[in-house]
Length: 107
Length: 123
Image (cartoon, rainbow over all chains, first blue to last red; front, side):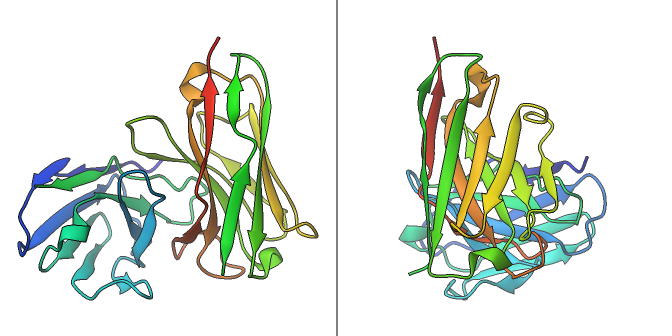
């Protein structure tokens, strides 16, 4: 089974900061990776799919990159509403679509 | 608007069963793969199960294989999760989630999430 790790697990940041989160897969997954944002008490929200394609309605300060085993999610200028937990998910075509452990972005 | 509404959660004793339902609205339900994803209290997301748009393929996380069954009724625009032999570690919020793209299961992300239904397994 494909395992995902995320780093860091916790990130302290301020409004306006550039933030980068890394997701690593235990084996190559091409670009079959998605990123989600979850705010406390809410359902997750799809941000990026195919590793780098922005979901409709998601602000352009979010971007994704990578392929194979290493991926990044970048927030170019952190906004107050971006303080949340971020998850990557592999969608490699394996029938087990695992999530990463999450990265919490906080003050 | 496009919406998924889960129901069926509750408090259940270990070893007992529960069936979750998720009703879809404002999209062509029969064209989309559907998933269940859960989140234990204070923990991360765990993918649980997927069912193909036509119901012909179903896959499960190892943690629930043999105990949970996903199914769907396209005429009722509903996906189900039958949970048997429940354990304390199954305690979680269960989300019903839609594939982003019609007819192509999972590869392009999951874009519509329900509000979740809470399952508590406790004696």
